[in-house]
Image 1 (tube, rainbow, N blue to C red):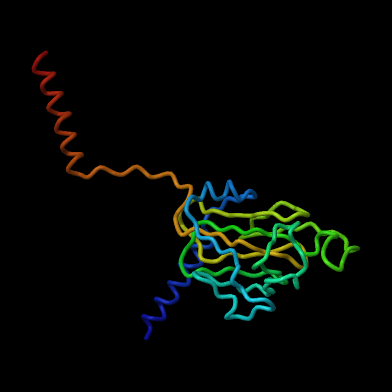
Image 2 (image 1 turned 90 degrees about the vertical axis):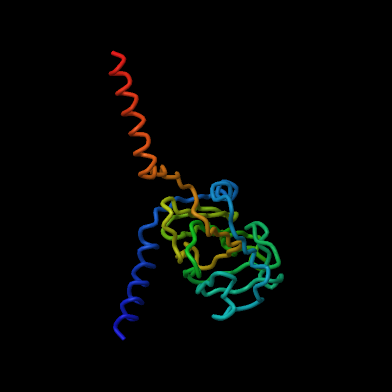
Length: 216
């Protein structure tokens, strides 16, 4: 009975270590992020449901999110083309929250905006614009009135299974969830020579020195 408990605790601690010790770098340009990452999975959220999303509706393939949010599939969400959000499928976000992955990932990125940031929001022409800014695992995006992109990548190959999402505005918008299961930006470590090859090379060097000594 004690052994499974210890295994479970060890698993939790290992998961925490993955998230705490990963060294992350940030990207504010999607093209640069995708070039750096190389291979990645992409969820354009086109299949989310219209309306408030309950627990089971936040479960996606390979991950889920616990952010209090509203699914946008039609003009009922207002028009957000100026923020880079297009139908079908993006999110209004009402709270900060997390993306939780089934397996470790090494990079993560999203397009973001603030749905009430511009005066062209339907029915709210006089609303004061608000600059959007988000954070992913503590890394901040730029401030923008027209939507933007933020990506993070692990540079040490440790991976992480959760991404903490935060925003500076009361409401936000989010789309095009991008992530990679493959280690990125790593410099390969030199491969050590097998002992047999080391001994063989040492022998050749010894023979060479002996031959040189005999000639002299």
